[in-house]
Amino acid sequence: MSPRHKRFRKVISPPVIKGYKPYGPDISLARSEPVVMLFEEYEALKLCDYDMLNHEEASKAMHVSRPTFTRVYAAARQKIAKAFVEGRPISIEGGKVYFDSDWYHCHSCHCYFNNPEMDKKIEACPLCGSNTFSNYDMESQDQHKHPCHEEKDNHGCGQGNRKRKGKMQG
Image (cartoon, rainbow, N blue to C red; front, side, top):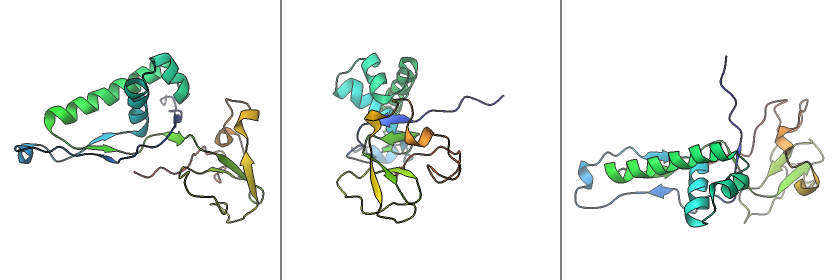
C-alpha cells in the first residue's frame, strides 16, 4: 500500500532571500552542509511568527488541514534550531507548493499556467508560445478545483492526468 499523495501547499509570496549563513570566530568548526528549509516550512513560520496568525488561520491561508500545518510548522522550527545549534547555513528551496499569483488559460493549447514572477508581464504561453491567453478567474470557479487538479486528456498541465504546478526554482 503506497502512502497518501502530498497535496500542494499555497505560498502567498516567495521568500526574498535564498537562505542564511552563520558567521563568527569558530565557524570553521561548524558543519558546512546546509539545512534545507522547504518553501512551505518558510511560509508556515512566516504566517505564525511574523504575521501572527494562529494555526487555524494559517492552515486556511495555505489550504491545508490544521494538523498538517502544525507538522509543517514544527519541521521548520526544528530545522532552524538544528542550524543554530550546529552552526550550519540554511537554504530555502523546493517543496510541493504553488505561489499565490494570477493564473492564465491558453486558448491555443488549452493549458493553465501562472506567473510566479509577478513583476514580469506574461507575453506568451510558456508551453506553446501563443499570445492568445486570458486571465483565469479562480474566484468564480470552485475553490477546491484548481486548474491543475482538473482531469484532462492531453491538456491542462501538458501531461495528461499528471498534476503539476509552476516550476519552483531554488
